[in-house]
Length: 244
Image (tube, rainbow, N blue to C red; front, side, top):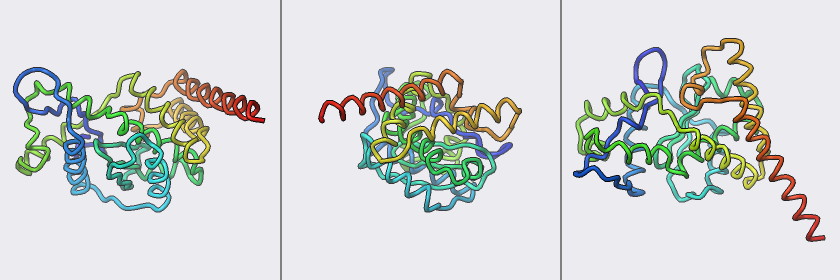
């Protein structure tokens, strides 16, 4: 996330490094993931006004509880920015932009789909994996876990810009979002409606859709999520029929 420029641009974790000797990939521990997320979270909140929203927190905790990593210290906050965006950090922090709340309106299922997608990135360790693969940049892990100066930490936060997940990672997060929303008793079609909203606004040239910079949304991806939902519904119907 580029911390001060034209709005809030989200950090590319690919520029973070773990700073260990050698060139092999070292897996971040759970505590290191959490510390990285908390350190970057503090930097974000030192520069932008954030606040708790009861609906965001309620949906977030409900969805996190059914993820593969329910024991992480999830924290859900709103950033007072007009962009349509959401971001997750390693180890649990999730931020929803005020613009996203306005765009989804009173459609909690749509909002839940986006939050579930971000939780999917955390549960699948997508940002952590990018850090692990970027060790050659040489930024020491101590900077991220309290050993660095305030300037170092601000530099790291500034470099967490334009986190581009791979298509495989986006598909994984979409799949998890469908699964989490179902498991939490919510309607997974909210994510499809969110994709529809983004695609419609994109066609109109809406410049507030920051989510598209880090989560490329295509019609094929939207259709894939719709197909996943249809297939899961069919399996559930078949299972229910077989039990009778």
